Image 1 (cartoon, helix red, strand yellow):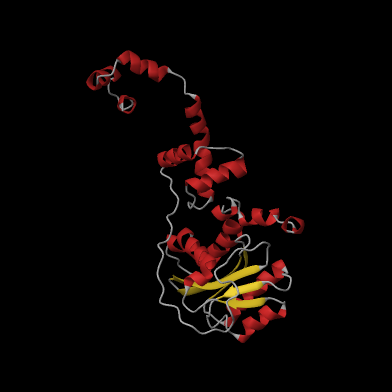
Image 2: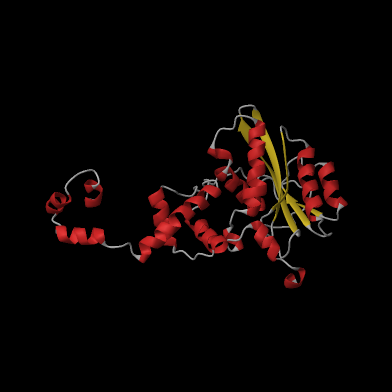
Length: 287
């Protein structure tokens, strides 16, 4: 307090007397060189600010600590990072509040082969897919994503102004073209008309994959996919009002291909990014 008021032109000695502080003690403190702790925080401050900016303002303490460790080989105390972020006015984005859906109803076009067990021992053994929508001033934009349960990588995606079957077959086609999955893998979806369409089911079967579907209206049957949408909603979609579909489409591309797959550190992957986790996989290790 004395330092701040003295910087505004007030007498340091007078302030010391008012606060009951010995002037000699104050001047001795002010003349001391910065300690190791202060020097380290001064070094970390701009780096933490850069990491937070590169994350599009989404990273909180945990992911910044992980980024310092993995990308910069700096082991930082979580409380120290939290204090620095507080001093810079930085914070991560909060989680989206969960919303309850209506009660599940029965009716199937395919059996549920996943049964809420979203673990995968290798890439391309379990893919999850779903559609989300978001408004712009021009109208809604629809996005379909195919997510690999092994690394949480987005392996295929597509966008459109409406929800035809081609929206989901295009996303699946991108995933197949990129990953070239071996026969026997599972594609898990809900009972939306796009996923129950002949075109989608035939595309799944054409490469030897199996179609799986959870119950109608039950978000838990595709919980990993729902978690991806929840993060995307908080970290991208709800952060501004989008003027045009093209503006939102470009932002989705940047989020999926650059941020989510290559930069975003995931707690379930030991704070690695999806691309880093994929790169660790080798068939011999899995065997």
